[in-house]
Each structure stands twice: as structure tokens, then as C-alpha cells.
Image 1: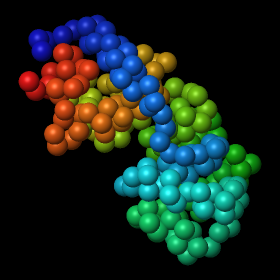
Image 2: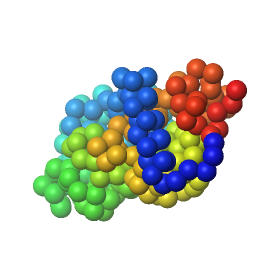
Image 3: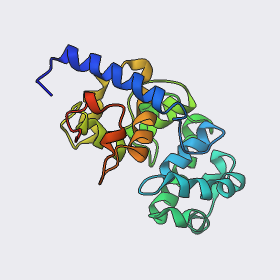
Amino acid sequence: MPRESAAARRIRTEEIVRRLAAAHPEAHCALDHRSPLELLVATILSAQCTDARVNLVTPALFARYPAAADYARAPLAELEAAVRSTGFFRNKARALQGLGAALVERHGGEVPRTMDELTRLPGVGRKTANVVLGNAFGRDEGIVVDTHVGRLSRRLGLSRSDDPVRVERDLMKLVPERHWTLWAHLLIAHGREVCRAARPLCGRCVLADLCPSAEP
């Protein structure tokens, strides 16, 4: 693909969004949740774990701990047992206990709606905050950059970085703001179904003519 200007790259990105939205109309947040708190907890558990595994664990977890205060006062060993199968269960249990306490002490048990307040909570980084803001509150303040989003963004020539923070910064200049939350869902769906890590299915990819990495 010839060298392109920033304006041309933005136009190409908008076309990528249009085609992916048509190809993956079902794309959505894969973590099952019914409230901002449930999504926040599920997202913390999803670190180094599949969404499918998290969704197997959370029904019992949410039933046992329906409020932030429940996580705050839960014995650590009990929390560890509840989330053991998600991996790194000791760190995650401590994060959930600290999260519950912080939500009760600072926010009356409610999940805050700003990036600054969310990222001050235990176990919550910018990626997790973006998930919650976009999917629980409908606020497009940033772009979630997970493994799929980073990999596809590099393949598509939209970022050269391996650093999620820099990838997000690059994407925010290209993806229309109204699509920031949707973008992650689209790339995750496309990465799982078509643009796989080891053997991408370029022959059936709707983005082949827009992708500098596409193979014949």
C-alpha cells in the first residue's frame, strides 16, 4: 500500500469501521453483566483469562456478592476460592476486596463515571476503565486496546507500536469518536473469526484491499 497522508488514513479507517460493522453486526461486549459493578468486576477477572471462563465464574460470584460492600467485607480466602479458575486468583481477590472498600469509602458503593476516578480504584487501569465507561455508561472517552485490537491495528497500518497506550493514542486520532467503544468489539470479533494471529484468513477478509498486510 503506498504511503498515505493522515487524512487518507482517517478516511480508510472510517471505511474499515463501516465494513466491519456490516460484517459483524453482532459485535458487543462479551462479558455478561447487568450493572456497572458487575462489568467492572468481570473486566478485572478477565485479565489473562478468556471471557468465556469469566462468564462461567461470575453468575455465582455476582449472586454471592451483589454490592460493593459485599466484596469489601468478604474474607480474602473466600474470594480467592470464588475466582480461582480465572487465574492469578490471589491478586484478583485482593483487587476485588480493595475495590469494594474503595467504592464504599469514596463513592457510596457506586461505580464512578469518570476516567480519573475509575483509574484510582484498586485493580483498575485505563483499559478496564474504558470498558466500563463505554459499555456500562455509554461514554466514549477512549479505546480499549487488548491483544486483538493491538494486533489488528498494526496489521492494518493504523499503529506501529506494541505499547497499548500508544496504540490507543494513534487510534483516537483516526477512529471517529462515536465509534470508540464499538471499534474494540469489531476488531475483537474480526480477530477471532478472520484475522487470526497465526493463520489470518485473508482470502475471506472484507478488509483485504484496505490492509497493507493482506496476503494473496
